[in-house]
Length: 367
Image (cartoon, rainbow, N blue to C red; front, side, top):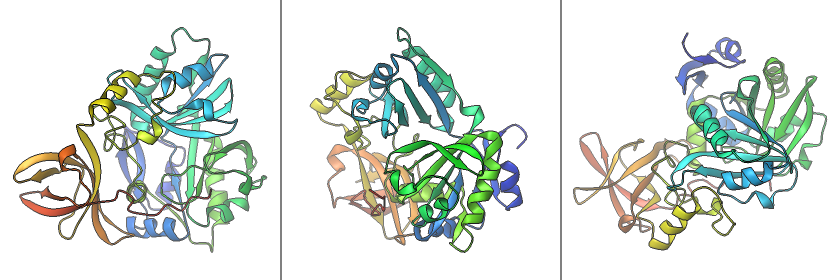
């Protein structure tokens, strides 16, 4: 683990007995007590994740809005100050550079949150696309830490330690001026688990006391530290995409079923022409949900029909909440009908699967 980056909470994870792995070049806990126990804590009470590996880029200046609007697929013009939207940065060919959250602080200040595995690539892409705009770009990832408190009692726990009324932070909004344990924090309400919850961003030197203060407030409320293992099972049950699985340079947002976040009606964004063309021509591939009675699907497994490979599993698990073997797969459109039969190649055997809704789990966000 000497060659990987460590978050400012690394010693905390070791003290808590976290099983640390190399994730995108970062030493992060995959689990503490166990993936199932942590998954259920988030669904029924609360879990707290160290997500300090995520990237953050500040965009400031008189052209900040115009730049971000051209950069992402979603419509930044709809945002109020302190509102957040989800979108993607695309290549001219329509594939995805990365998915991201856009925080609008004001018309000349935006905060972009990107995936850990893509920080360097994303920032280089942004710098290249920023040419000709009057603005400053700063990659602040190395000095910002982030924890995510997720679950139905997240608000009750966090309210004990903040100086604002959390009920006033609506879903996909933020407050950039919150104090926790004497530390200035940005607190948002987005989530990646299908449950209500908050993200807390602060300078690296503050994050240990922020973590410990929140954990102390959660005593007796079922709060558990949670690792990357259950973060993936939780986001997957809620049909939330993961870069490198459901979207990538080779998979467009439309093929991933994320067309809601692609505003083809706005003036322009990078990749728009290619996505308009793809939509008009008809999607060659679609992302479907499926369930299986036997066999556990995994990312990368082939999807077969009549001995023909027609797609690939993007994510698959035994669902801790639903107690079923479920998955998402990118398949040729001709084989994407609801209720249709597929085969999943699990090692040397093909197991039957049935196409079902991708909405495996009913999200419990606070609107």
